[in-house]
Length: 247
Image (cartoon, one colour):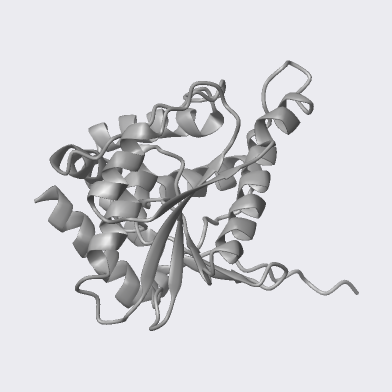
């Protein structure tokens, strides 16, 4: 049931946000974690019954972190007739040279380099769209982080186009929950490549994940309602400043 639910979430996201068109070649950015591995597999399944004709390839950017073993992931992709490319990079070496004052890797810098590298790789393999595996829980976490650290009510978009790089980005798992993703990975026996990044599970995002999980446990309805609020455009009520004209 979990795999079927994930595919339903992808189809709904595609229909509601018009993510995929005929003739698209979609690159799925694959880190090896549960989210991206599931996205690659489910997109390969989705293309078999989608109302549009498109192709899917996976691209893994080799970050340079030690002891990353993709052998089982490669075997899984070969078994399921899924294309997965590996692209080398020097990202980890660059990150080590640009640590914070207290010796931590800069996650924001890492994200910037990964995005640029996957765009280059996508173009290399003839892709016109890049799919990231951010899900609904990620979107709500980003909303809270932006409000608390940036003073703005915003999260990432289901799809966007960057004219600077001439690349379209989509997030097909935007309506899926992390709980369903975990269940679907187990159901489909999808191999997960453990992260060896030194900053893994030790980020501000992880703090917000734990904070929100506590909230969901106390107020179960908040999980679906917070996600709904991101597209509930008819119910937005924010302050509009009307300063008095000075005499």
